[in-house]
Length: 251
Image 1 (cartoon, rainbow, N blue to C red):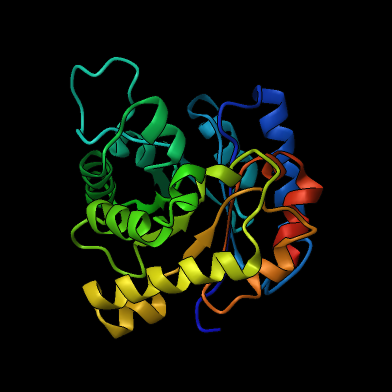
Image 2 (image 1 turned 90 degrees about the vertical axis):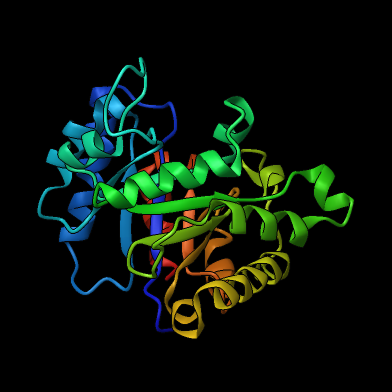
């Protein structure tokens, strides 16, 4: 595999300062305890914990990211955080378009694309999330939905160096249900074909496509072993250092 797997943890709205610092410190210790790990690692804590987590993982090689950003650089947007503020706080990445944002905040593909482009302008790497609901899968719309979300959400200027795609079937997020390796690979292969059609062969070969949706140490090896799955965007299992590290070790 020419694409280096990315193991990314989305902590969502979990963790007080002591919890986040302890988790980040434990992971940093594991990273420092070995050499030449065959993966990149990223943690995305809640906004107020970013500074503490940046300090806790300093020098370990673990990157820190935000869970969302606004499309504007600054302004009267109470409760929002810009990509430029995230960059200034020490972030390297930001997640955009997570299904919980699309559902809970009615974010459209156009909104996601605008946020992704703001992230790139601020010097962040962006993880663009796409995925179908159970109803859409049962209606045979899986590939159509993911194709549409990819085309509508991909930022202008996307390259393998600054953009990661995360396929997260909505029906598998936090439910304990997981797409089979074959199901996940089918969608990942279709996404890679979309990357090829939009950005060319080199981008399709180099851009990482992650799987998200109840990935855990027990199923990670088989999922990440698929030819078009380049790591994971992990929720629940990212809150336990041993589980998250176990997923990373499956690489």
